[in-house]
Length: 638
Image (cartoon, rainbow, N blue to C red; front, side, top):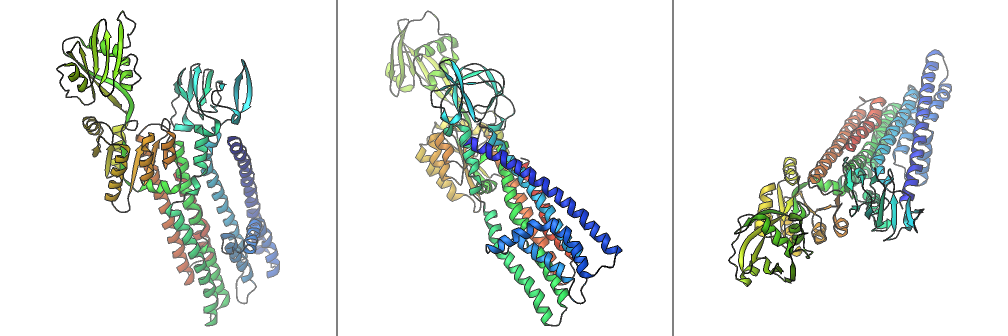
């Protein structure tokens, strides 16, 4: 798939360059020929038909493609596209010169067609830039990988790699598939995935994601996922389908153009016929009707609004934010309630010892005993205790280790019975325990029934969690909510520290869905609710929210599939970045909509009263289109 993407992207890129170069040459030649035609008209006394032949040369050079596409549209029954309308208007302007008492409009007709081509050129350049904003993602997958076979390296297509294969990634090469580093140390560039420019250090035992670039050392990597299931391939798939989900604004513009254009064309016909039947000069009213046709082209709307959304999605992708469609970008812009999962979203999901409160022994000795008893446990709490006291190579003898379900672990340490666990275990052995004022998971320790003290373990809050909440409130988000399965005290401590408005603790996955449904029912009309999560148990809530936002880099596959927006790193502050990009994109789309409609209606009114000229009509169509497209390109800058 990546090979096909890369090949098609390169081929399309060359085609675009050649087309742009050809259009520039054609516009330049037509401009020179138009100037020459005007000079000939001023300095000679040619007949009308002779002047027509002179002006037809620059007209056909500039507008041959437009005339051809108009004929093809007419043949397919699509007569009201911009090419057909522009062709009829300019041919009509050329024909006016042969009517009695009518001045020739040859220069205006050629200029209208020439300026239309300039507008098309700007549109093509803008579309190309928008495509490039997303096309950088198409380059993150290499076509081949260095597969290690019997001590030899073989270059194979990435599609042939299997889980468990060993590959070698040299400095400067892209990582072809997700894997586990078996040997080597290096720095990797993750900017294509996360938008972060600071390289990340990778060493043996670390996971490595496809789409990264190996910067320094040689890495031996064990394949963890096949090519089609790897991170880079899934990103490509998400981007590929993003254009299928259109926003309400885009759907409105499509419906508007279908209704608006026929109405204006009908008005142009009536404007040419009715006043003439009432005694008006046919050439005068035909000229005004042709201006109606020029103005009626809905190019500015049907091009600039989707282009703004496309640019917004591309700009977000450069920040490591994947939006699955412009409808989700629009929903983000109307977000007034944000609901966060706690563990792994606002916190690191990594437990650590935050306090040691001994009773009758030293802090180090309390940690020493707890770490020894938890030596063989795989529980995250046990890992945090071992991390706090890594000095396990001493003369202590640990025997008869037993894990008591729902209570803790007991073991014989140097002939003494040491128990590490919750209050139930302390009560079971008769130790007189007491609670702790600090929030977190409290681990109590006793020796031979005597209470030795307790250790407080807590999940580390992410560095930018408070910043994320503050930034969302600055954007106008009315309510921030945290849902967690953790204890009340832990939930309250985290919520208070980062400034969450409302929190609910002790929730099961089904409870989280119920809470989100209640919040959806209570939210203001016209606003949306976003849920931010990362775990597999968050998938139902992500799917239920108006906008589901998944922490993608380390999140589960189920959460990423259920989400509408994927953050490629685990920074909650990216939620505010995504909302800011969405609001800016919608603002640009609205500016283009009102500006385009307003100018067109104004010029149509002026044309009906004979105040407007063909030059004003050209500006109302092509000029407005160019300005709207240039404005839409602002959305690329996230």
